[in-house]
Length: 230
Image 1 (cartoon, rainbow, N blue to C red):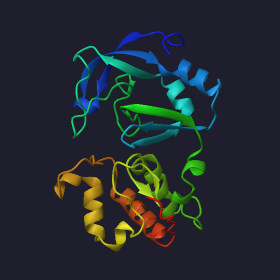
Image 2 (cartoon, rainbow, N blue to C red):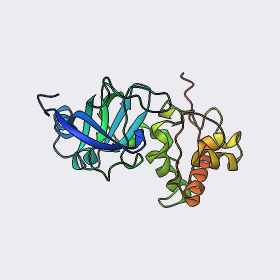
Image 3 (cartoon, rainbow, N blue to C red):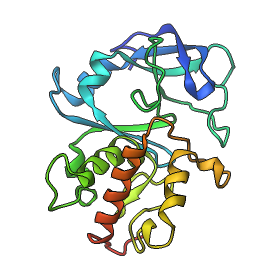
Image 4 (cartoon, rainbow, N blue to C red):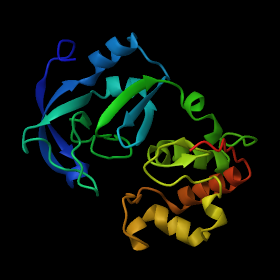
């Protein structure tokens, strides 16, 4: 990889570490991505980035190129990488980072660590049973789906499709079928207000956003798809 994209030293504001500046040895992701996927322009193609623990990020591949994402392979402040996340896990051997100060928001600029694979695949092709059918664009159900796609799918699955870090949300029971709505909303917004765990808070979600999330979950409760596979 270093033959394609030489190593450089970068300094990045990292919200995984409370917004502190961190120094890394890293390589620019774009040349490696272009070589591996044999493409120079990606249009609306989705890049699926998977971590060793099952965390998954789906984002526009072109954003990784245009916004100059880096792959860090060495922590220059802490030998062997400073632990990250609630489980205090090493983010190595490969950690997606962003070098600009304005690229610190973890929702807009996710930072999957222990990066294991990258594939070019549309979200609907990879997770076809997460999209609610029968709803027009702009409806609360579809708006909620977009929030699920942009935020929740990193850790959670619907109909056994999505991330594997957090609980499945739809089968065999949809979360709305065993949790009161008020608790779901509170947990999505501020998980530690109800219990300690690994789920991050989502202060960026408004009450209207939460309305949309609930509409999506209720819609999916009527559109279950369960292969029964483990």
